[in-house]
Amino acid sequence: MNFRSLRWVHWIPAILAAVLLLPAAATAQPTADTSAAAPSVPAKASNKPEGAQSSDYVGSETCKACHEEQYNSWEKSPHWKTTLDTKGGPSHQGCEGCHGPGSEHVAGGGDVTKIFTFQKVSAKVINERCMTCHEGGTQHMNAINSVHAKNDVSCIACHSPHHATQPEFLLTKAQPELCYGCHLAQKATFEMPFHHRVNERLVQCSDCHNPHGTVEAKQVRTSAAQDAVCFTCHADKRGPFVYEHEPIKVEGCQTCHTPHGSPNPHMLKTSNVNQLCLSCHTSSFANAPGIPSFHNQAAQYQACTLCHVQVHGSNVDHWYFR
Ligand code: HEC
Ligand code: HEC
Ligand code: HEC
Ligand code: HEC
Ligand code: HEC
Ligand code: HEC
Ligand code: HEC
Ligand code: HEC
Ligand code: HEC
Ligand code: HEC
Image (cartoon, rainbow, N blue to C red):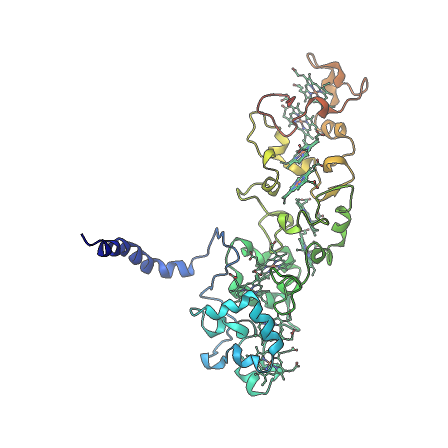
């Protein structure tokens, strides 16, 4: 038997499927894109002005002649990869993928009125320009409607294609300084005695927030399982437990904890654990039959968590003793 030809036959259904599905795949919006960094080239949007011809594009090598500095920064950035995009054509490649067609600019010896410069334009216009290539993937699904976009914070408030100071993601500054530049109030919360170690660079703002927007309030991310973001790192609190503590499932971690930082140990919302517990478990139950008398706060003070150790839930004990 001829194995080589057999292997060929094996591929035919796959090739057929690929050919048939190609047009659909090109227009479909990716919903769960794990390779979030790879932008798709959408068929509709483009930085191409109406009526622009291929001949209006001169190519990056031409720009290099007069803008060597920008050419060099671009060549070292991931944006050089746009030159490999044969599907999008010249309007999606190189300098002109962002700055638009350059033939008139060049013909005019560098006429600045004939090229898109990112200056004196609204955040909306800038965002749309970048989004022609970056609207795909889970990272950017909500970018147009993000709190940042709605408050006129554009992509280039955080990213700089030519003057990035960070080796990754073309950021203008490293976190958390980047964010503190505009969110000074949050800086104070991370300086509290008990805090997520963001200033120490153990945890990043963007671990919990997506600066490009999310479907949650406050641009808070969700875990991979679409659950509270806290579970990404505190998986032991996820359960499921045989004996769940209702507020954790229903109201979430922030019922008892502040997410950034707190003057209280374990980043609790109250300085005294009992105060927290008693905000829901009224002390009146102390007099109920079968309930130990030491529950009576007036008689004796003991931290609730001294006995109810597993306040996040337990698999063995109804009262979270272990
Ligand atoms: C990913 C989009 C993008 C690409 C690709 C790009 N630029 Fe820019 N360019 C910008 C933005 C945004 C600015 C505004 C300054 C900034 O934020 O870095 C800018 C600014 C400039 C400036 C003004 C001076 C400066 O340094 O700020 C020049 C000149 C320029 N670009 C030329 C080029 C050339 C030449 C290429 C190709 C080699 C290129 N650009 C590729 C987005 C881009
Ligand atoms: C013949 C030389 C020449 C070529 C080729 C050329 N430019 Fe320019 N460009 C200039 C001059 C001159 C200026 C204005 C000088 C200045 O103000 O910095 C300019 C200004 C710009 C600016 C605005 C800079 C600012 O400070 O706002 C951008 C963006 C730009 N060019 C992009 C491009 C791109 C993209 C290409 C290739 C498509 C290109 N240029 C090709 C000469 C050239
Ligand atoms: C408020 C700051 C901020 C704004 C505004 C912002 N970004 Fe980002 N961006 C970041 C940070 C921080 C990262 C680092 C990755 C991370 O941890 O999420 C990032 C990562 C990225 C990445 C690479 C990572 C990935 O998974 O895709 C791309 C591409 C990107 N941003 C594009 C954009 C575009 C396009 C816009 C405008 C629509 C934009 N960003 C607006 C802060 C910002
Ligand atoms: C013509 C298409 C195109 C446009 C327009 C475009 N990008 Fe990109 N961008 C890309 C490609 C392609 C990559 C590389 C993706 C990869 O590495 O897989 C990229 C990567 C990035 C990254 C990730 C860098 C890293 O280190 O991983 C950031 C951030 C980014 N772009 C921001 C922007 C911003 C801001 C704008 C608007 C000023 C913009 N892009 C406009 C195509 C584009
Ligand atoms: C250029 C200024 C600027 C930078 C830089 C910036 N932000 Fe913002 N951010 C804003 C503005 C303006 C708002 C909307 C008003 C507000 O809520 O403060 C906002 C809103 C937010 C919100 C939502 C708050 C709410 O009430 O819904 C979060 C979360 C946030 N930013 C996180 C970040 C993170 C994380 C970074 C760093 C990666 C960052 N921001 C960088 C300006 C900025
Ligand atoms: C451990 C996760 C986590 C980290 C790290 C984190 N945040 Fe938050 N942040 C949250 C949560 C959760 C909320 C929502 C609080 C609420 O709903 O009241 C929030 C709320 C916010 C808000 C809305 C206003 C407020 O204070 O409630 C801003 C702005 C913000 N964060 C910015 C930042 C910045 C800037 C950083 C980094 C310096 C950061 N966050 C780091 C989880 C985090
Ligand atoms: C990116 C990972 C990460 C995420 C996401 C995260 N945490 Fe944390 N958390 C940590 C780390 C690491 C520590 C250890 C603190 C230390 O040693 O500085 C910690 C500590 C804590 C502590 C204090 C523990 C103690 O004994 O003092 C609490 C409470 C806490 N996290 C709650 C939360 C809540 C609530 C959320 C969601 C809003 C959350 N965490 C999201 C990484 C994370
Ligand atoms: C009903 C109030 C309550 C809720 C809701 C709650 N916690 Fe706690 N958490 C506490 C108390 C009280 C402590 C301190 C326990 C102690 O002193 O032994 C604590 C301690 C912690 C600690 C540090 C000690 C440890 O057990 O690792 C972490 C981390 C933590 N909580 C994370 C979370 C996360 C994540 C969530 C959401 C899934 C959450 N908590 C929800 C009350 C709560
Ligand atoms: C936000 C409200 C809330 C807070 C705060 C809270 N609990 Fe609860 N707790 C509940 C609810 C609701 C239940 C389940 C209803 C029930 O069975 O009484 C429950 C159940 C319990 C139970 C099991 C009782 C039973 O009969 O099933 C114990 C024990 C308990 N909580 C201890 C604590 C301790 C200790 C704290 C403080 C660390 C605390 N709770 C904080 C709301 C809260
Ligand atoms: C010295 C240990 C101890 C301390 C401290 C303690 N408990 Fe208890 N708790 C118990 C015991 C024992 C029971 C009864 C279990 C049983 O019925 O078998 C109980 C039962 C409960 C129940 C269930 C009551 C019911 O109706 O079923 C709740 C709720 C509760 N405790 C909350 C608290 C709160 C809130 C505090 C702090 C103010 C606290 N406990 C402090 C040991 C303690």
